[in-house]
Image (cartoon, rainbow, N blue to C red; front, side, top):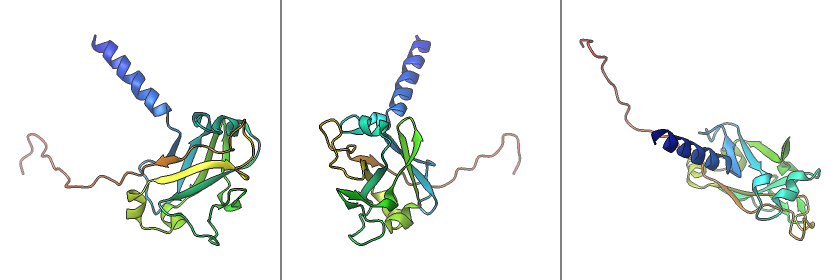
Length: 164
């Protein structure tokens, strides 16, 4: 019985880990150091994700949180019909795309703001209005929560038999 419960729990855990559409590496992050934002387009089935996973066209990140850049800023998203070249995603194959950034520099916010507001983004073609099987060529809105490092008092334990 215990073995069956262990197998069931392992399968559930593996299934939930495999269902991530977007994540960052490393995890946990240092918001003042380089991270990679990953998106698995095959798992973005609500909109044009599966079509985007197989396209040879360039793909772009649109992001608005923790902070959206104003029009004229070098990292502004651009217009829906013409994404900003600075936000072009790299392709890793098998429908995986990524973008490297330093969160505090990219969003021009403090580390506390990176931890306090999730990264919100979507992936789209240069022209998001292109037809992707009767839908716009974009994923649904994706959200990546960034966990702050756990801090607190460190516990010290004495080694048994050691006199202090």
